Image 1 (spheres, rainbow, N blue to C red):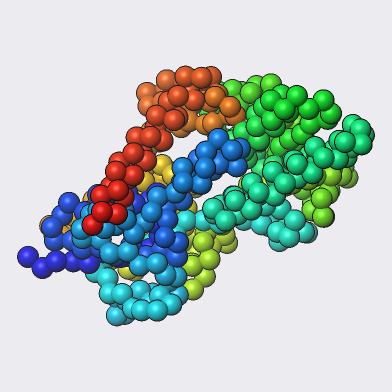
Image 2 (image 1 turned 120 degrees about the vertical axis):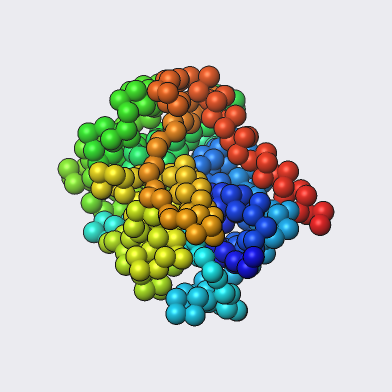
Length: 397
């Protein structure tokens, strides 16, 4: 039988899962293209910026991982265009032919243009360099603050502002507050510590999520000392100061904005239909319309459920999309019709600072506290351990 070549753009959660699902088929060879030589596990970044783990904890080597499969080639390059007429992916250095193409390059922080100064004066954590920059600058500022206390406790406030109270914002706010509390307790520093502010544009954090998660997260944030400001929209960000639409101003040492995401900039150069945030429009099979052999998965897509409602972007969505696309590619090899994508949420776990979490497991089982923290960590190990074993095999080849 004729072999087929599948090209995957993006080594994120979706891209890795697609490789795992297709690698066992002897008719398929693959090329994974990513501008970075590592898989970034952004869902665990809060542990990194809070000094719980080092950088290696949140990354997997992609060249070694691809070598372990034997039929997967890794190309570290940036994609510049897709020639659909010739079925070619154009990178900065070469052209790569595909029979099937999967686009999964993820997302970037969305900085609304109507908030003046937002992009210039805030941090993001959508990439390892951004998270590392924040972590290093934060620790230097902590040291500067401790040194300033040699002249007494009359020091400026040290405020960290998290803009956006979705899943990422809540997890980062909780972890930064827990870390700050631990830092000052361990060092027995007697002067004023760190204040974490979570600025929320809606009437509740985690807007639209299950009430149990909202209540559990809010209780935990308050216990950690996080200042949660509901119904507050940021109108302007200046150097170390934000202005809210109520007229209130608040100074800050650091600000992280998590108020939304946009598709990766790749979508601007492909010529495919996108929404206003650059997400690729896909049909029910996760195909790019009019291109039956091109798929898009994860944060880069405008994924809709059966009621035409937008599905929030998560690692779980990327993985389920990858599994579905892989299954449809295998069906096409057999001459079978494709099936539409139906996303079924398999539960959610939220890290809430320190050794504490909250979540809803399959079957609607609700957990919080230390047990939820252990479950979340177990899920992470179940995901990473097989990848690390594979990358070890690939490194030896």
